[in-house]
Length: 362
Image (cartoon, rainbow, N blue to C red; front, top):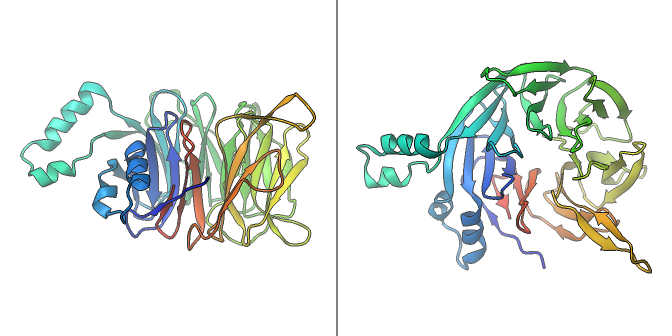
């Protein structure tokens, strides 16, 4: 059974959402220029445990920290390693990498922030402190998407300046090191996804192309214009399955003009399948981080299987298995406006989506 609840923290459109690798934190970014760090366990308890309408103050109690850019926050991605890093991209043309401050440093900051404040102010004092350890400036326009390398030492950023920047974050300089700036796209780049095996990364652009870059020399090894719509949407977030064998892309259409998500296979970059049913362009895809197994009929052989969620401009969310051409579930009218981002909890059966109608759906 699929249950979902829709909730709003404020009136600002939400553009980005991501869950940390331990499943404890949810980061959300909005048009308000703000990143919020949310206690996901508490939020889930409040959202699914309340039979009454959710009060704003209940939701605000789940916010552990907040920090800001100088423009709307369009994308957020936690690093999967143990350093507890979060990357954010913004309309202010910058990428920031934030680190959670631990131990005595956090305790000291908490004591200072609480000095001389009223009980009400103390209640609203952030419970966590995050510090920007990198401020990356290489784009000339809005940053639309981000993706970490599997080792967590490099970060790819996509922008509406038609480029992709790849950053080396293994050093100590707060400005990072720009490894390469790729400007092969002819229009705004709105999606980037690093291959889990570390060999490639993929990008998707308003120029109606998907491109696969080889990391060893930054050359394009595959490019397709398979019918991708040129209709403008805020994002085109594509996603690799956990073993890197499949890539789910957005904004595709069949020969008959049906909106779909097209999945490519790594072996020869051929189309593997099309997931159909959305009424408007697909804007975001996100694979669950786990691998599932299934046993085919009349066979004892167990096959690896993956689950992918798809969001669309129609406000709907659909969930698919890679061994089927029909969805596991379809959440109709989840949002009034476009689904902008999707994220999964790696430790619980929980899917989280955000929309430009200022709402989260769990």
